[in-house]
Image (cartoon, rainbow, N blue to C red; front, side, top):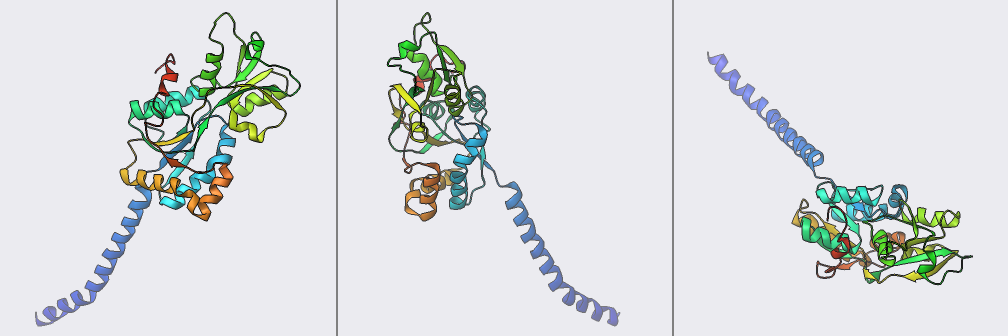
Length: 281
């Protein structure tokens, strides 16, 4: 009995430190596992004016910058075309962070509870262009002829419909999955004209501009209600302060934007009406 009494305290004293260390190590491991495995991934999608491969090439630097600047798990996702993009957007689940045109930006803020975080400065428009050998001075000269454009509810498709409101005097619309595809159709002679975002003209040669649409606020970035207030604040800060750091400046140079400025629903007020008549609006 005496021997047993002496042995038990010795066993407890020698085992206790090992047990405590093991428990602490286990808790730390589980804590790390929980943080890594269950952290929410933020899906960042961009309006499909470019094909998926080109979208990744152009905008991955922005996603990488935000991931590094905020510590958030941000993933770039793409959309094939505007109809599928529109259908997915309306569900308000798969797209956590979105960068796109004024009409969609206001729509989500009003209907889906998204928060507008920032925008590219100034405004943006669309231009109706032809090949450099085509002499077209007025859009009406294209009635009955082929025009390549992204379809509605993309802003390009909506603007093209506004140019030709008379159902009896219409061009032949060649729907393209993205703006680069529309330009390619003009270059190959498959269409006489294309409607593309005006900023794209800075990187494309051999086109003549027939007419340019009325400008709207430049593209904005908005966040869904699924993103925490803290995450939204961090993303907004990283965007607006991008011009202040070397990493941010390098990113902006790669995506060819001057920077991002603060924005809210007032900036985009009145643009969602462009979706009037679009199925599902």
